[in-house]
Structures are given as C-alpha cells and as structure tokens.
Image (cartoon, rainbow, N blue to C red; front, side, top):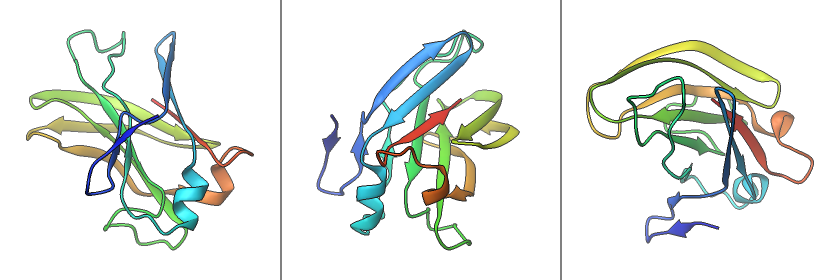
Length: 135
C-alpha cells in the first residue's frame, strides 16, 4: 500500500490508472490521515504520461491538511513533481475542482508545482474517504 519512512512521508501510495492522456491517482485513507492530524504528504509512485513522451518519473503529491503555504483552513494542497529540466503545462483535478492550465519549469530536483489551497478537502473526497486526483 505504501512505504513510510521515519518522517511519515508515504511514497508509492495508492493506484495509478492511465486512460487516453489522463492519469488518475486513487489514494485511500485520505480522510483518516486528515482526522489523525497527519501533516505529511502522500506521494504517488513514479509514472509517465503519453502526452509528455520525453518526461519520465512524474509524481503526484497530496497534503490532506495542506502544505506549509496553505492559507485556507480545511483545504488540501495538490502538486505535481517532475524531473529537473522539464517544462510542462498541465491541469490538476480532484473531485469537481480543477486548476490550470498550470505551467512549470522544474529547475531543481524535487520541485513541485500545483496549488497550496487546492480545494476544501471534505467537499471533494470520495464517499469512502479516498481521493481521486487527475492529471
């Protein structure tokens, strides 16, 4: 289900599904982590997208309680991480909320691009407490 280190960051969490040019990341237990007050992110396994054929090792990341830059209470943060040197334009969606087109030049390792105040978490979770994030 995922590997958590001593920092409580959980990598390779959830399931990725690709159809056409859309990648959907289904992340279980998001509501539970938020209710436990866990501030650390959940990070997808690395993936590729057909519309970005030269880009390897993209990852999606969600902070159920929001990142340090979140300003709206109850909002989560959602980001895309890409390899250094990559320049992308993309849309991010969770539930009914979509942001973009977003544009980022990943000019350093592990750089994220997305929204600090992506959406009100409880409003956009699935009935079972999971999240469905789309790129």
